[in-house]
Image 1 (cartoon, rainbow, N blue to C red):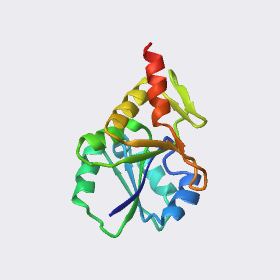
Image 2: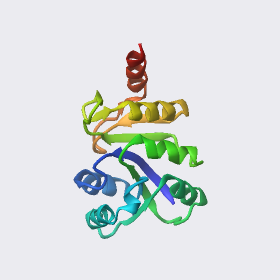
Image 3: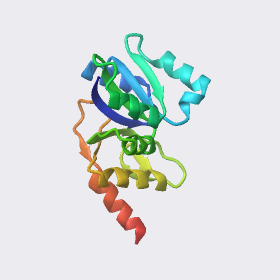
Image 4: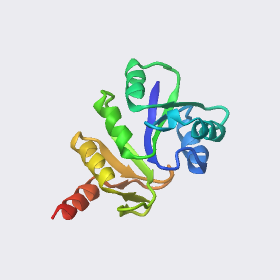
Length: 166
């Protein structure tokens, strides 16, 4: 399998993913890495309904996803990995699946979150995960759709974290 993009977007499968990201990379499978959704039949069904008919969908916890990705199953698939937050991707990496870049699309404002850029708000848990990912050499960028320029956010996250700890 070819991993085309690893993306954080708390909306998961929605119009921008279906209308822009899937065609841009000719995605044949979406892999959602999430510790909760796989055990929630209603949310799982909603995501299956929202997935384009010509695109496969897998919803796996981070350990199962790492095992599957490291075994390189489904060699013909072009995969978009989606996660609602950085924590499952940090776990994915810690379970042994190595990657070097994450695109952050949308992290909505929530309690105790502060803005990183226009569409990305992070709470203390998000900052912790982002910083650990950055320490592992993972490049963090923000971009809503493929035609937009990338916005480097790794250094912004580090600076905000440093400022908060003072």
